[in-house]
Length: 132
Image (tube, rainbow, N blue to C red; front, side, top):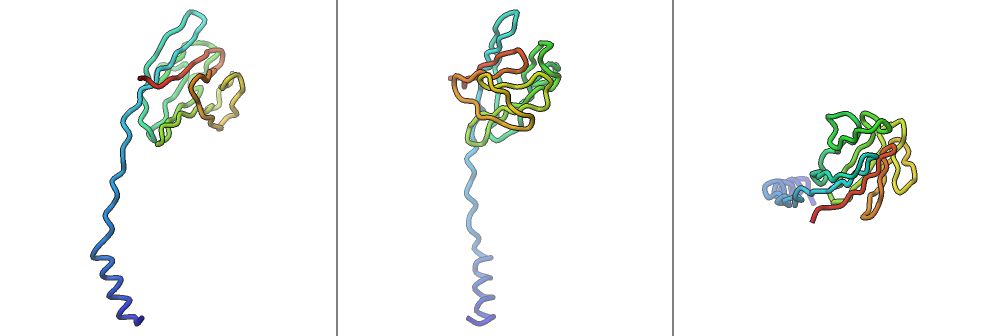
């Protein structure tokens, strides 16, 4: 193939680009957080955008999931839903630790949350389930 032929072929490809495949955007997913504190249990709805921003968990009132307990750090952990809809938890440097089924999660490490798992933020236990 000559340089002129290669140039004509390249020009044809540039004139007829491959159509972009539209991305399938997943709808928002509601997850119910069943929070067990010493003074009782309550359910809190959380809205996740798959592949979107993380939700912060902690004692400070500006967190997405506020847990008003002295064992919980101001910004204790983060919850994230992947683009595929998998739910993850990560400790963000808390003092009293983040636990998954009783096992401590190291700082900066994320763990998959499955149905029936118990996530501990300090002394507070949370069960997360997708809303029906």
